Image 1 (cartoon, rainbow, N blue to C red):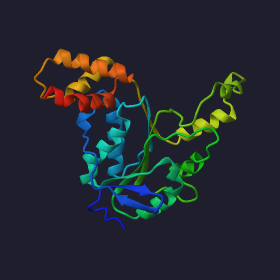
Image 2 (image 1 turned 120 degrees about the horizontal axis):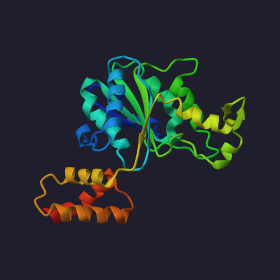
Image 3 (image 1 turned 60 degrees about the vertical axis):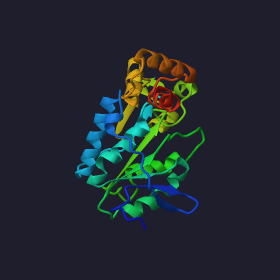
Image 4 (image 1 turned 90 degrees about the vertical axis):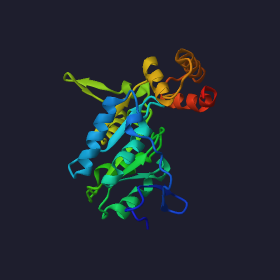
Length: 254
């Protein structure tokens, strides 16, 4: 059994069917996340409602890769762990074990976010169906000390194809979506808070780079050029690329 008074996070391990305490938590802070202020404030507000016992929503953070979705969830833990927030990470293939996980924590005093990173489902994948009942309950209501936060590159978590729209009809002036679209949208609808993360513009990318190179005393213009060259090589200008640039360039700049 985990002592949640001294452990702040855990990861579900399917093979042994247990929660493994996390000993080294990613130290990312909310103040380090640049270019996502609106998303940050909305998720903070939702989490603070949760911590104070007010109604709060399950959250889906979706959008462009490397834009800070998972970092934002981890930063929340660092910001609020002293107020009783706890984080449990579960892989997509382990979502079937959510009822067991929830049963283990529903009687604790702490407030738990169950977190699934990079959540998405392929055509024919039925794993999302038990997730629906976990989000809104079955005959037993979800406990008020548990929320589900997920990140995804897909807005509706399921693949969307053009043929799905061909069955949509206009009846008496109202749009009636196809059963396929209704099924796909109904999953994301169970997340009361849906936050979109878009590709970051060049100035924001360079601001993130500068946040890593606070003590850099060399030619800042040359640093920015190197950072942009690195981004072009990796075909992405985002927070993840900025961190990777720092990892590759920081010793050269010291």
